Image (cartoon, rainbow, N blue to C red; front, side, top):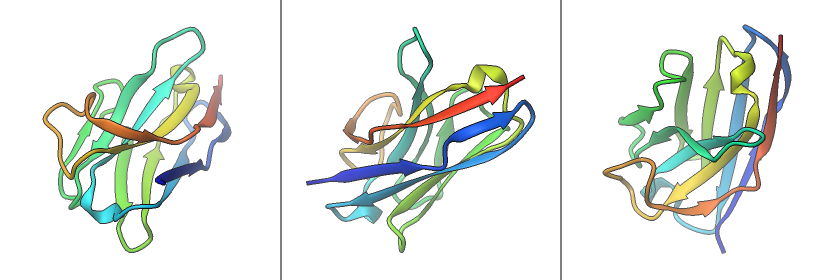
Length: 124
């Protein structure tokens, strides 16, 4: 059974930074693409960032491009999301996702596994 466990969420002021982590277990982590999604209160879940199996190819939502960085450590079975210059509109539950293969055509599709989420609150 694949398990994804997020950590690192919390309360931060506008302009601050947080780093989220997602620890994966239950399958060969290095062979699969990974991603981050978020869901704000009253809104639908949306794509944030994704990284292919090698770690050399990444994709971002326009709203976070230049502020967020996704990375992975295949030796530690962990994917990270470094979030800088946080804004109030970044407030949401952040979910780690595991794709069904090492790559994707559309990072908004092909997710096979989900974590339970971690809450990020950005106060102004």
